[in-house]
Image 1 (cartoon, rainbow, N blue to C red):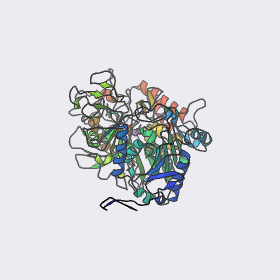
Image 2: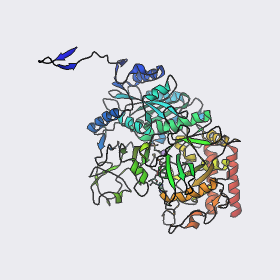
Image 3: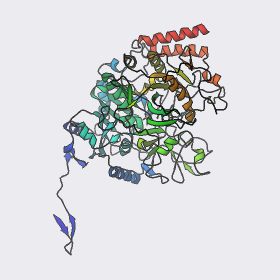
Image 4: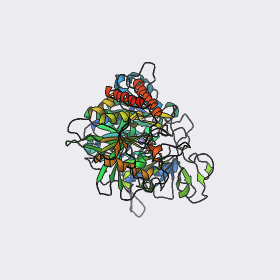
Length: 636
Ligand code: GTP
Ligand code: SPV
Ligand code: MN
């Protein structure tokens, strides 16, 4: 049918289009019939259960992003940061600002597939298990009709380069368009994913803010969520994730911690590889030799900063492969090769500035989303650490929307406020960061925030000893998740919140990776956070960490003149870490091993493993701790 005006010119051509429907629910965008049968079944099941008002099948295009951003600006969920190109500020409901570990569960038929046999009477901290039957009750109290009145977005995404043999595919449904925008940055969202998937299996990712219309609670900051009913649950056997009530990063961007660590660690165990909470970086030395290292630090302990380090010593070149998650496997020639399964950075904002991390700053000048940071009167972002990088005296609005200025008490940005930025925009992103084969990893570095006792760097004496060191990783608690516990917390392998299966089995999996013919990476432990008697950091950190990396790489090259033995591992011989140009570094204090501290620490770590991993602890780990204790006993 054609509509004509008086002069008989064609005004509109009107086509008869049939709106696709799944049940009664219209498909607002995309072609449902083009999805594989498995995806159709998954989506149809979600529609039936969650009762959205429409289905929006995402294609990852820029037009799609523009449309969603426009909608969110209009609604007030996003504010344009006019100082930059295509940068946005988002303020969440103040009750939804971090991962919620106490509401994060793994469901398997057998409890001990998920959690270790803890000592009797002990509350386990390495993973939370719930039986599928009990979980079903919890889910039934949340998910039916949870998307009423809202659009359901269907997001096809690849963790790792689309089509790479090391990559895995997920499909996320969500009723949050903020989550969609962040997933587009953090993962690879594209129709090519459907092609690569064919009729294959995918990780089923289900996310709802848990706030159907008409809303039952007062919505703050245009951020409908449901803090009382948050639940993040994983079914590793079915490769399925269900997350309810929160829109915050690790709770809602399901490709990240839920898939790339918890589900993937189970797949990795089954297939003989590793899914780890690690950065991957390349270091080219003044001699022009390139090395790749991976490093595991607990949340908010310095991975992003190390991955993008700006060297304090001339002659080194750093390139970034990934800042949070590494998937690694030994290739046919016995070399450990790693990829970064993500496509973006979800980085801690406070502390980031042109001195500490210029490469991160340059990454998020455009196409980025800032969550729970403060805003300057000239349309810029602001957080603690940017004091010297904004116009003097500028007016600031806090993350809670209050007027504020530098020197005012309290914090302007939430301590766990974050930037979400495309990795491709990082000025030092490695040319091989998307290489499907991955990069060869020669060293694995553990670390944490250890204010006392722990030296700047330690080298493990063997692979098994390195696994023990990893199992004993501890750190001061940070704002990355809600915490009720002690100040120094165990975070073995920096994986405590992200374990997908029994931690004892996980340690055994690590030990079993050592096989004849494999070039096992050397394992190290670093600590940038030791403080003096006044609580001041003993080590300048950030760009100066290159000095420690340099020592580590010389050890990887087999330099035997730079180490000395100690009960906890190999330490640098005095004078073998380049300290030139650094004033007032108290080397003695940085490297001291107080006997009483270490006797206590060793016993405490063994006790932790006995309590928390119990009979699932591999015997070699306990033996190594016994040896360590005996060595310190002799020194007493
Ligand atoms: P997640 O994204 O939560 O996994 O954190 P992360 O491990 O990537 O930590 P990130 O690099 O974002 O650093 C967290 C905080 O530690 C920031 O406030 C940094 O400024 C601070 N930090 C990082 N590296 C150093 C360092 O070498 N020395 C000191 N003193 N602080 C550091
Ligand atoms: C972490 O806590 O380690 C993070 C942030 O990287 S989140 O994605 O929220 O888990
Ligand atoms: Mn992290």
